[in-house]
Image 1: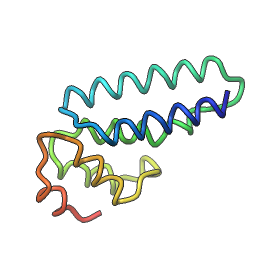
Image 2: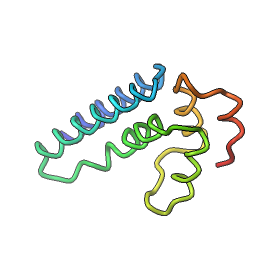
Image 3: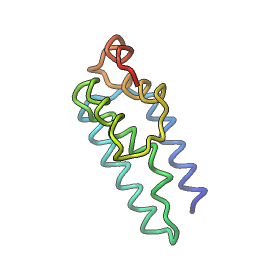
Image 4: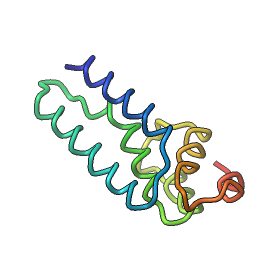
Length: 108
């Protein structure tokens, strides 16, 4: 089950990184990832949530209202980031509303 979860997570991430999202698309992506994660948690006898941490962080990034909002998340001690600064900027670049200039301007 763990290997299947890894495969699905990697496939979803690869697919998502080739798409473009609106705020609402990011919201739907978050909902879908949480449902899949919940299903695997129900089926597994071992904790499997950590396998979905990158996807959940991608989903969170796809839901920010403004590019600058990421700085509040990034500097918070509330979570350990599984995404590199380069990954964060790449995910922000998937949002149709965000300009490349605004994304490149942020310092992570």
